[in-house]
Figure: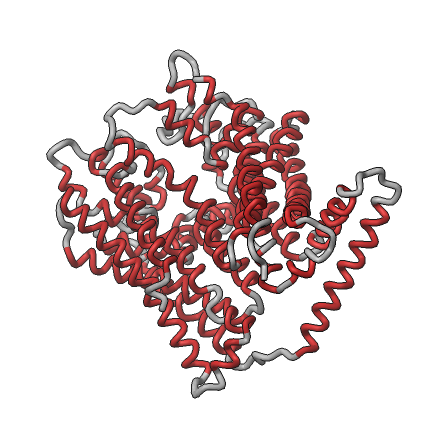
Length: 617
């Protein structure tokens, strides 16, 4: 059944296309690393390319495949029916786990094998044994994340709780090295890189890089294989890759706890311990909580809703709003008052504060010398662009699908309200809550930055906060639009995360690979314009402009580093350096704001038009 699921075929095709196009036209393409006639030296490039995609896309695919494995059956009541058959709980979990894991590993292996086959025709065949070991390690890495997601699915009560845990866990694993560096700077333990390296490799993400580099015969490192290859093979690009290449940092013998086999043991422990603990709890839990729990939950929701309704009426007492606007605003405020008291929002606010402070006073290597007062705005930009965007996706993906699944939509639409009014009121209620919590979380960051680097300009700070609010509203709008047309929350979150992740991270490689097949000297103008159509890049260009930085699609902190250091930073592009005769008008920074507005309005308008015409029964 899982092998016939279209989502797995789409995942396989996406992984294959991204891997092979990045191999042909990405930063570690043999065409860029080696002179003509020596492309066969790039036989391992295809594995290095797929390593990164498996580490990121594969991890997200694994947790999305596993987060509803058990909790989906619990919420639908299917698990109680299955366990009335001659199955034990252990047999039920083993069969569910193996069935989904088989499909996940099979389609990942197909994508990698197809990529290696095409790369063999272009650059030569890599040795079969390293390829086989790479496939086994990649399958094990995916099973680690699938096992973790299944463990979470066993202990939570709803699918939304499960997805709220597993996706941030992947993001934390990806950024684990930066978090560890910031933590060790705030709490000095030792200056030796040994402890840093060991702490880095406790994450399954960095442990996977270590063991797959080992399989490819690369030096002991928990960098991506691509950055290690560039460090040793290219003289044109100066990277910080050596910071995580153990032989380049540590003289003499390498301690046993930095051996590659220790990272393999870390992966095994991550794959076994969480699911073992979760099974111990699942085997003793009551799968039928009884009606009293549901009744108490409904009564609690009713009390909160009544409190929000009473407070809203007091706020709007004596209002002169029109008859149609008043109930819409009532619903928006009531929805926001209920949502703002949810612990998840304040946990998100705490994460924003901690992550922003880690960037602000974290690793010394990441902070420019004598940063200007506007440095706080660049930290805000980095946090909002990705952490805020992901929070907005989670805030909006279940606004409509959740009500449809519970039957609440039909109940709400029995009131004198149009369908589009229902969608927009849910959208603005959630978006206002997210913007308020985010703004409150960023205020202490601005105060700390003021104490360290001086007060940022007031007008620029307010303008950046306003544009950031528009950016968050845009992503909530996109996620709500997807929620209005998707039939289930699982489809909605898969589509929304795909839009958020695929566009900014893989567009450069895709565009380079496509254009290189058409012309050898492409015009840079269309490239930068199409790149700026991506919401994250558009937001970065707009906030760079407001902060007083040069015209660039890159993050403001990277632009500032390029301006204030001797590092050429070839991956950071200033448009004034590309166009000698002046930047074209369609790359003006002010156009980035209308692009954000269009992203926030066009999808939701189309979704409302379609939602008006679908059958909700």
